Amino acid sequence: MLHPGQNAPSFSLPDADMQTVSLSEYRGRKNVVLYFYPRDDTPVCTLQAIEFSDHEDQFGRYDCVILGVSRDDCLAHAAFRDKHGLSIKLLSDLDSEVCRKYGVLQQKQTDGVSRECLVRSTFVIDKKGVIRHAAYAVNPRGHANEVYEVVKRLKA
Image 1 (cartoon, one colour):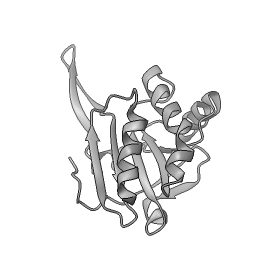
Image 2 (cartoon, rainbow, N blue to C red):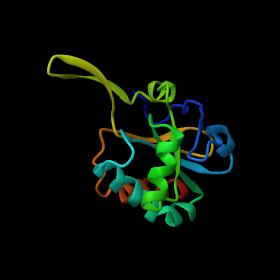
Image 3 (tube, helix red, strand yellow):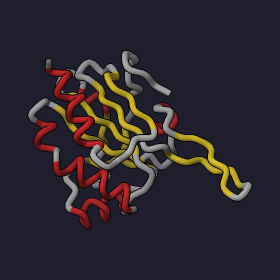
Image 4 (cartoon, rainbow, N blue to C red):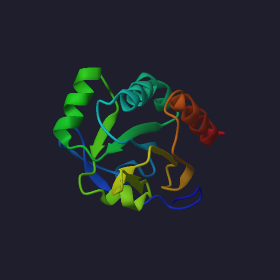
């Protein structure tokens, strides 16, 4: 698990339009909300993505960009974005490399079968690339507002 004060692990991932997005491109320019979610177009993940999209302008006033990451592919991200009118960037981590770097995978036992699951998690990364907030196993309802309060405190 990562903690506030640590440097955020670097990454480069494709977005829904298959354009590469790197954490380094925001360094010195933007704060970043990096949130990990299990799967495109499921009810809870949809709620979370819509809440972040609905508040994107507010985050932008604090020099902040929102990036969602799951292990779905770029085509699934594009369909999810288009179906729900999402405006935030959705990044594809097919090989789970970034998920591992951020410590958001855990083993779960279901009917005696162990499988790797993505834990819904959010990180706020400042313009210097330092993690300022790390939350694992978040409740998505109202989460965008909670994260917004964290981002507002960065400017203070």
